[in-house]
Each structure stands twice: as C-alpha cells, then as structure tokens.
Length: 358
Image 1 (cartoon, rainbow, N blue to C red):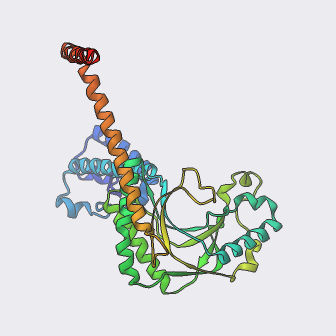
Image 2 (tube, helix red, strand yellow):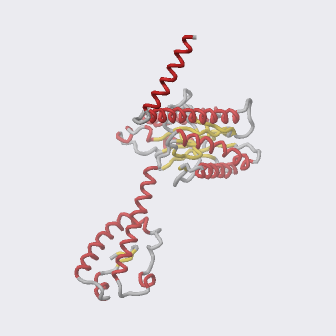
Image 3 (cartoon, rainbow, N blue to C red):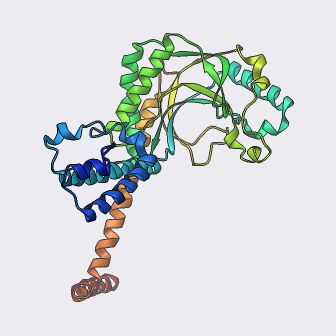
C-alpha cells in the first residue's frame, strides 16, 4: 500500500494483525494502482505536503491500517485532481496577445537583414524560417484575451501601466543596446540584449505589466520567465524543414556575428498586439492599443488612445442595447402578450391614418 509516496509491504500489514484475505487483495490492487500513478506523476507528488509524512507520527497508532488505507486513497484522489487541474490550466492557457516593444532603429534592422542574408547564402532553405520585415520586436508579456470585452480590459490595463513605467524610469529614456547572437535550444535565433542597468529597468517594467494585467483577471505571463530578446529566425516558421532533416540551427551559420554590435533602440512605445489577427501592411502585428514612453513627439497620442478606448466601449454598449431591445421585442411577441401588442399597433395605425387625413 502507498501512503503519500510511502510504501507499506503486505507482510507488515499482516504482522499488525488488522487485515483479512479480502482486504489483502484490495491492498494489492491499491499497490498496483499506486505504482502506476507514481510512475506518471512522482514529480508532482514531491511537492505535495503529504509526500514526506511518516505514517506512525501522523496517526499516532500502528494497529489500524484500515484508517491508513482510507487516508491513502483520499490523498491519491487529491493528487490526481490537482494534477488534472494543473494540466487543464496549462492546456487551456494559449496566449493570443502580447505586449510588444517595436524595433524601429534602421541601423538595427539593417544589421539583422545582413545577418539573415548571410545565413541564407549558406543554406537557402532557411529563408522561410526568417522573421519578416517590420515584425522585429521585444515581447514584454504574453496573455490570453478570449473576446472583445477582455480586449477592452487589456487596453485599460495597458493605459494603467503607463504611470508605473514612468515611476520606474523617473524621467529617463530607456535605451536598449543589442549585441551578439544566441539561440533557445538551437530552435530560435535571436539578437541578445547587452548587459547593463537597462536590463533591470526592463525587468521591472515586465513585472509591473504582469502584475497590472493579472490584477484585472487576465491570464498573463503564466509559468513563463521573462528573457528579453530580439528574434530574427525561428525553425517553427517552416515545419517542412524538420522533414528535410533540419532540426537545429547550426552555430556556424551565424558565427561571424557572434559579437556583432547591432545598435541601440530608444524605447518610445509599447503596443498591445494580436498574435492571430492579420498583420499590418508594413509587416507589423495588428495593434489594439499603444502607450508612449518618454517624451511625446507631436500631438497627444495618449489622448488618442483614450478616445479609441471610449469609442470601443460606446460601440459595445450600443450593440448590447440593440441586442437587449431585440430580446424584449421577441418576448412581447410570445403568446399571452399578443393582444396588448396588437392593440398598441392598431392604435399607432389609427393615429397615422388621422395624420394622413390632415
């Protein structure tokens, strides 16, 4: 029998004198079930509070193994439920929106294009794995927004994030220098962010964003550590490469750029973007809303974002009002209400005829 990961042999139970042959068969079946479950979920059970409990210390007695058996069953049931909930949450959480810091410095973009072309010259089939023009960015936070209402909540969270960022930066510009190349498991190639105080500022902003969105009830940044990077190629963009035997990015294709300085990006904007909606004509992602970081250059973009949010809220309110009106109209048309509706319509028709005579 297993109790929270602790095994009791059949001989021990027999010596303690509290079990018959029928119970012994139950214990054997329970032991087989426990072994199978433990093989699949031991990693999760290690963190459970009952995984290291000593049975004698917990119960204070040794002559009632039947009680221990019931507790073991209950503990395993709880463990299975917790594992199922964790797996369901991970399965259901599919990010479809993200906070983006767009890369607009032409020097950086030009350097990345040179890098991409150099790689393609060595292996032409890698062309389809390259990040397209206009899409260069740093992902600050990923999240799941399932409908327009949640998108509106996300826009509101982004606007609320602005004062927190201003507090972190304290009037200073956030400048991000890029230097060198690295990969994630040789599957994703990216330009590295150079070390410096700017990294801490960016991490603080990312944490503030995660907190702000989560406080709004949005699934954001779940189980994902933030590592700022500028992606230039991703093998998953071209699934056919795996069929051709290309499963990893060969470091030799970018070795000449391993310490290359690509330039500096002055952060001026953070966008709430969709991963799934059609990209803009310039290649950048569909943008729901933006906040401006640092000095404003002409106009009042923040006010414009407030106006955009207000328009979206008004449009949603109008749609809900129309839907409610239609539902009420349908309810009035149901049996039992027909006489009153017909009377009202007759009255309106009579009034219209009188007006026509005039």
